[in-house]
Image (cartoon, rainbow, N blue to C red; front, side, top):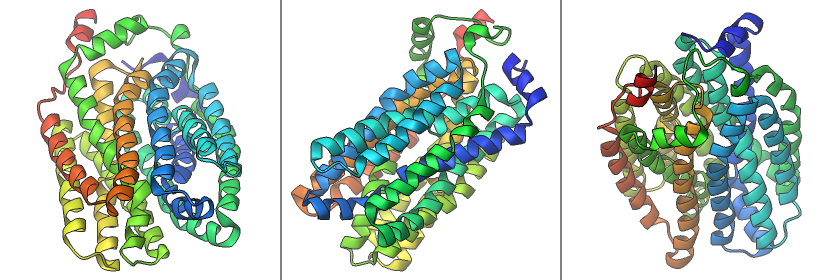
Length: 410
């Protein structure tokens, strides 16, 4: 049975309009975040910082994005998504502007780390996907998760060469000002993702529960715990690559424009990967899909570090990693909805995403530390390979059924 809010939305706003608005927000919020790696060398060159200083600020960003996600999701579940999305977009724009006047590591940690991180927890694609789960009919959801995730990838594709061009034309501060303006312009789109507060919604689809009861139920479910553990690797790999790959390629002698196009290709090919993943969610077991994605990521990273770094191998890595980049999100989101329904999905997916961001924190921070200590990223690349294999194994025992307590309550 469809959730009452989804029924009301289907009568008033077309599902295509809802998806289009969510995709635009996902694109505009993921784009600047995905392009942060291009700001590393200009920023540390101006202030004479090490890569560990820049990396630590973005590690804080990843951690606080993950830490704030369950709480932002809980607020969106309880009071509706619009206010949370608007607050996140405005805070995001303020964080970008604050980065332009952050002349010390502490200030940079506060702007690029704290403000940026908490802002993302309120307006990133995670909130958009949760809104899709509440507003769209059940048969639209898996495909919409794939489209919403792909739109974030398109943002990365669009903003990567845009960042290189804007930094070259206006400097890194000018590029951040442009990004801030675009985020403010996205605020009106949030009203198209209006969800009914849980307090006002009927419990016809899912039984009501306290916050503590919902969390206790989730973390007593073995398959949910396995999903949380597996998603750690996704964050570790993606955050490290996003922040440090442009510098890694430049260290190997490639022009900065090559790095821009490699990261852009990751975004472009992830559109294909995310859409394909969303389509496959309805056709193959989601746990097998996740296991294959993590295993193939490890193979792609192994090929990058084993072969000479040339424009051809760099571009091939961008294309292959792009196919696997956020393709984990549709099956992960669909599994959370399958296990526990959509009523508390923003919060429960938020806890899965927190594991992702803890991985991101370690990937970005350790990447900078190890580079400064050893002069290369080799150890992090090998850790990424090992974690990918471990996550492939961890996802295999997941049971793709509603959690037993939910069945009993129903």
